[in-house]
Length: 457
Length: 93
Image (cartoon, rainbow over all chains, first blue to last red):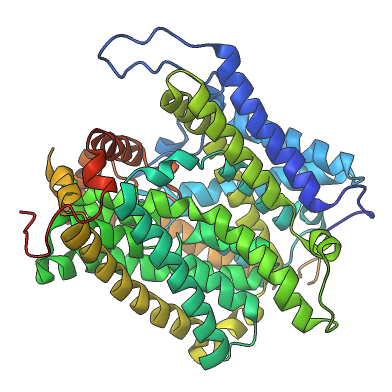
């Protein structure tokens, strides 16, 4: 973190403030816009709409010229203005210099835009190589080939961008979606996933004896839960180093691309039925995008089951982040520090408070979803119209910042000896076995009628 | 880290950025226009899948598909919530 002076407010509370205001702003915009008349029997147009949507966006898909992806400068300018104003005011409120922050932020945002444009090139997009990788790469190139200009340094606020992004992510987690696939969905996503996470972490600590417990935890979480988003949340919860997050994200993206193409062929070879195949894909492949691709390669039934299982698994992010944070402050930091059992006050003092912002945003959107008419449309308007765009920008700025703060040598250190990759491979192998067994048991043995229903169009 | 790079220090930076420009503006568009890549792209577009989606809300098809599944589960609560409504020997095809 590059701080100008001693902050007036901790970074966690500042992230809750910025992220929370962005969430509340998104909700207020949709509520203020009001509810349109929903035609009977027609799902379009939506009953709720977000007036911010035309003013918030990210670069779009392009094939031959990057200009194809920059067709909506108004939306990019809007995203720049909102993020710059919110983070700028946050910096000023915490006692930093707004004058020093703003020019650097403009350049970091520009780098994030370039990273987005790189990720949206058709060949890259279709391979599932998302913006986090390119944002990291651009930052790494600047910091490792030349030097990081002084003007950029006040805007390199990795933790702040990540934590504000996570609060926004909370507003995308609807608690009712946990029940989307009934008991089979809960068994596959909420039983297998924690078992794999805990077993992989244990394997890393006891068998591989990985030096850094936080690296071990971030890799275990991103492999077992849902890739980059889970890695970001867990890294923030256990205060992992930036290089550890980069390592976990790099490994996860590499294996995700491989699994996205290999699993459909493996499934055809094993001749699995589409429901079990979809559940297996959703429970194992890290990123949601790759899950969608692999599922659709099998067929429409596998595609919808895969995405739904992944969605239920996505709900675990908050629980995992909360659990990891409690475990870290009460057990890991205790063994690393004085051998005194921390009391509740001490646990609270060390607890990463931004998680409360995540949970609060999730509870608020879930409450509104159940209370308002056409709750699904309301949720979609809030998330699609502004929350997810702002969350993606926060994460993109965070990965540019990580790249700018990292040097290749320190990154190479985490790959040395191959323990990190071994951990991922062993954990993923266990995940593949347990997820397949649970998918088969749930849909073939215990809930065969659910599988029949899902096979219907 | 140094703050003011010497003239020589600019060379690796420019080389890296030049390489990226060449890859993204020449190589990748060429790959994207290969018939197999076009076919793959058309398949993904027809299914509404974004391989770059980080979270399920980034996936437009995810919204539609998960809603369909949720509706099926709501309409058939016994199938999704009551275990043992079938024997291991029963097939689902």
